[in-house]
Image (cartoon, rainbow, N blue to C red; front, side, top):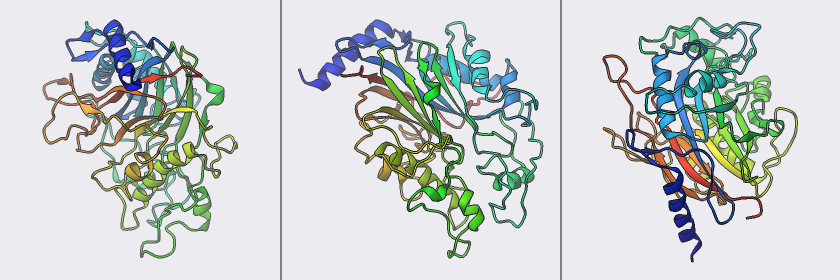
Length: 424
């Protein structure tokens, strides 16, 4: 029997056994990571969801209308692993965070206060362990990184949320502060990330690597921006030695599955290739933030993690690249098409399955993952991991109050992956 046919039949048998149809949302509802039969493989559902600027005070309000809707959507998708993008890292002194409070708890707050609580009568709770780490967004650099002639090191109070829990609009003072931070954020920790992992899986926390501090200039051939006139450098010598590649961070989070396999979840949220001038400093940074993962899985030697350990991903390691990468392979304003040239062309990445939306949406193509009409969110496994199916979730987005409102400007993207056991 051909290998691909065997995989398809195993997947069909598995889904028939563990994933009854959830009629209310047109989705399936697996009980958790499951044996795929035959060779000890495990099937897991992996997702990425940019939840659009969720902040600490939001997560402390268990009745927050937008977060309840977000939780309801995830309770229908039921991922075993999900990267949440744009959830604030609760750094001490940030809005809603006491100075003596333990940082990095917002991911677990989302899990405990919302996902572990059924949001509708037909929904079941989800139970996760959360991984969070500091990010560069909203962290002052002490330099004039936006070259406006002023170093801004204090953030103003953010504007309050809208009546339905939508994030408050940025102020001019907030943007001036954000422009001089290591990554754009109007307060410390804004637009952070959290990796939520099914409590039946094991996060190998002593093996996690983060790359938040890696200088951009370490990357050979980095596309650092030129000066405003197209010559020289946007950054002076002192800035160039310290300015960071990651606008938020890059994480390698290894997770052990029930069959003993370890999967490295490679998480990031690059700067959007927009909101800059002719020097294209954001677009260039977006390119190189995406390039980092191509370099990391290929064994580049310039890479040093935040603990000072050099080296890339071990050859043969299983991985899944997860994130809102802020670049579309076919359209948009990305610089030199980093998705197409660096990821989709990489022989170590499985790009065989393009997630397709479960329903039409006015003005959007089937593979668009955002309401602004671009494919920017990704679940990209390594070549050794077959994709059973993948989708862009647009079903079940409900009205909040009297007006129709989606909970984010991004749709969740998910994929069911067949993870081989060690030695397969």
